[in-house]
Image (cartoon, rainbow, N blue to C red; front, side, top):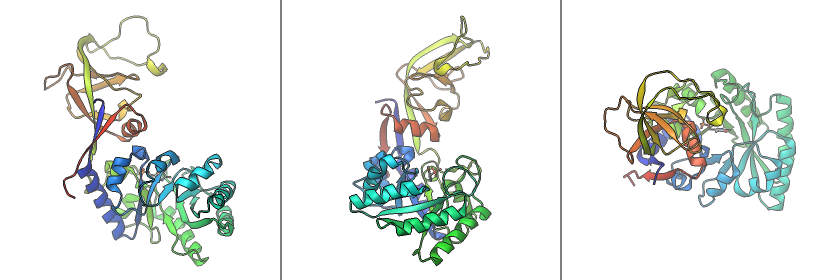
Length: 357
Ligand SMILES: *Cc1c(COP(=O)(O)O)cnc(C)c1O
């Protein structure tokens, strides 16, 4: 069935072993962030037990899919008050930054006779979520410690997300320092969560400030890449995920569209270059399934011209192998393409098992 994503479980497990080893050697625990694969149970199940402190996702619906797994779950996106009951039911802990929400979580936890773990977020300058004023953070710390059904687990930060601010020795030292104060106030071995895959370069360079003892990572494990320097993580494999799509049309056509110019799909005004008559192939996949700009054909002689909701147009004029209608074309996938494919229902998934038990 096409379109289909194949997942190379051997490469994926290698990546996890490599990164977890690197982190554990530096005294850093990891959370497996599953939002990229929308909490897809067959994959997460295969990875559970590889040494993650938490399974983490930004959506409660994804954590719910993982309920059969015993590893604790954490909600990454700041909870909605309207979802407090579900947050407490499906997540053992969450990242937080608002007292009103904490009160709602405490109330839900009391009603469900549970204890909910809380990590308070500190904004170190990226200007997405978290306490910007330290005084307000300490106020929240006091409040949480008063709430009977909440357990203050620690603090965390988020960088390189909105403001593209890198985690550095300087800003993460500030987080570590706040963590030490928290410990002095009697919070037992707090989690000090220094960010996402964006901080892995500091671990690789043995520069992560002492005290940072947790990272929440998806991209690094699944793609082997890191966003702070748009680099790769040494010893990891790229291309765990491959998109396979079927050719439904091949024709020679001019490179300039003919007729009166209006708008294309998604109200875009594409610009075309006259390259004469070209051989084009259409594959049955589109923007409803993937992000075309985050795909790279494995055959370097193929060029992606663009896509509408359901059709992706390829230029195969320079092809070095033969293509016919019904043939399958393979693509390497970037983050945005994988995210869309797992979020929707139209792309089949096939796990290629790793042979080691
Ligand atoms: C997505 C997310 C992460 C993980 O980011 P990666 O770049 O995939 O490692 C960590 N923390 C929060 C709050 C997130 O939303």
